[in-house]
Image (cartoon, rainbow, N blue to C red; front, top):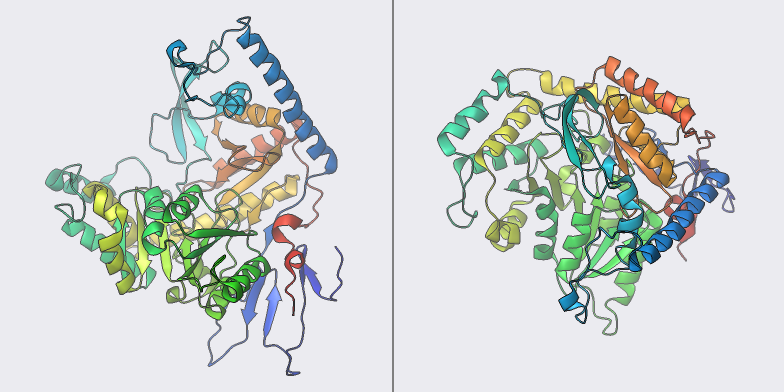
Length: 552
């Protein structure tokens, strides 16, 4: 790429090393988009290792054929809609009743075009019913369709011992019952299955208090609050923190729960390019200089929304730089660690530990218990005054039912396991094994010639498939080889970037990973999926730092 400023290029990113205005050399250097600050008072503030992230571009012919595939599918979709309108082909989609034909349509015909004509053709690759615990191996109920995936019927056969490469069971703690789960059974016998009340009424148990104290201790913060649903932890708590007259700066690849929470808040929302700190700083600077539209009053609050590990890209937030910006512009930082807590960092304490940062540098720490902890629910952690405020104002606390006692006990058990409070080092061994499996799996995929996205330390591994026809063929062939995978396409990803998303687990053995890799190697040759040219070029619209030059 062009280098007009005479900087250095690391993994496709341009970094300028300029002198400060006073003529002294800057004490900060930038490597792969991560600020590495010099030692002060004997403490290294920022992560000092090379951050390796890959976002290789697809060859031109792949993108051409991908768009051609969608174009041909769209043309055939219009043809099939024409045949349905004339009664030549049976319409299985939801339609308006004859008595309501003059009403405002409840089912928007054009909006359902993609679902009707494209998604339905490959719908058998999603919502597959599982009939076992989501461990490294699971059982899948076989089903077939007689009407091109509009409906399914079960054959009565169970596909046994399918290798599970799709569940978020990062530490392998979602497993069948054994004696280590005895405490969960005891809690079930004492407390029952549910609370049948909100936290504000009769729904706060001693188990909830024990869990919250343990979460705060694990994260090294003042206080924490737990919720019964991870999605609602974001969507129902962000509106309690910001509202009209506030500004939200959101990463363009944030999860839907963050997006929904931002929209429900009533705050003004502006989007910055993924992990692009120059894009973020431009928005922050404009917000401080110009204030609110029309009135030009200062914003009441500025809240930056990011994720620790992005679930579709497998990338890790550039936290040191973002913290530096939030301090510079007096903004607040909200970080969702759903995919990083328990799975990232030497002891599983998430992205702050990964970068060697003080957790107090992040104003609002959010995470879920559905991934690494093999349970359900979420938490908000940080300063005590923040948590006390949310106890009163959070919609999820006021209106939603409390966390189930057995679920709370499972999380307590998992946290003690990670912290070594159970008297063993198995928790730490799981974290290390997860890191080892992740690096091995990613390295082998790159060596085979696949295009994979993300950070080398992220257990979420996206493998790019691109073409819609190959998405279906890939998932079906892998299941035939008794390997369960998750394939993802539009609208969860950009239209031309359909992918398979693997989730590596500490419970995966080397033999399991080798079996999967052998099958992937075969599928890569059969479906011609090995697009990589081993060119470390970033997606320019997401990662080109020079696309948002700051004016002096």
